[in-house]
Length: 523
Image (cartoon, rainbow, N blue to C red):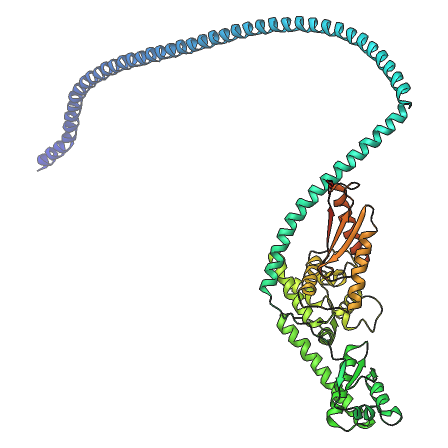
């Protein structure tokens, strides 16, 4: 048993030793083989690496050679291009040098010619100086002879010559001015005629003149006595209540009413008509009727003013302005009702302004208000244009175009806007149309005589005749003393004096005639 145990112990102890020896043997055997394989593998790797390095070295060498070749070729190309540029620059320089040489030669030739020319000019100047001296001497000799022949000095001859030149220049200037003015007047006349005719055609107004009532018809002479009343108390009551003068004379069937204020005149005339129709004529009844008629007339004034505003489509006027325009329905100018004239001028202004490309509303307003001063010119001093401007300013009118047109439509103040001459033209058209106005025979004859007198007082005028109801004056000048240019000048001067000295509606044409008649008698 112990032997087995010891045997087991020996076996157990020997087994590890035997395993370790076997293990060592196996390691030695396998390590020898691995070392041989590792050496072989290392040799193979070294050989492969050497071959790869040699191949890479060859590749690098080839790439370097290729890059060097390409660089050499590029350098060659750049060198060739630089050589070509150098050759071109050299060629240009040679060409420029040739050009400069040629120009230098030309400059030398020109300088030579200039020198020759200067020499010729110097010789010419010397010859001219000598010739000038000779001519001066001859001219002085001729002057001396002329002075002896003419019997006047050089200064006297110069003055005579300058006078002749001045006369010729004045004549030429007059001819030129005549031609320029005629051309301008022709163009302006044609344009103005077109606009005027168009405005007149578009606006058709009544051509019958109107007049305020001044005479009252009565059925019998007995009514005159009743209107006068006992000791004149009735007629004094009428005059005191209305402010008008009642004129009763020997004219049968008529009583006249006179007053500067046309509204008071209308009140007095209407009161007389109602008294005659009523038959009750005494101071109390007169006062009642005057009050009633005054209210009716004031209502009529307001209605006429508002109707005119609606007709002309004008807005923004002060009630006092409307009332003043209504009063113009009782005012006449040479038989033309001033309110209807204002409405007519308003529409004509608008049409003319529209044709000229201006504001038709402003022109219509200016034309409508242009004669408003006539509604109170019997109460204030001054002409109706200035009165109208002050009245409109006082009642809120702020448009400078309207104010300038109202104040300057008769030329009292300078025109600062284009609407003022438009109002002047429309005012002349309205007043000059057939049947618009009338004047007394005495005033008519006086105006014709004044027109002919202005024309006759001019130099070289033989005769002057006013024709076409004073719308034209024919002036006959002496053809031997006045030429065509001077005739034109006379026409302008006469027209300017007529504008300055006379007052007339519309326009007056001045026609100057010069005629040469040759007569002979056969015997």
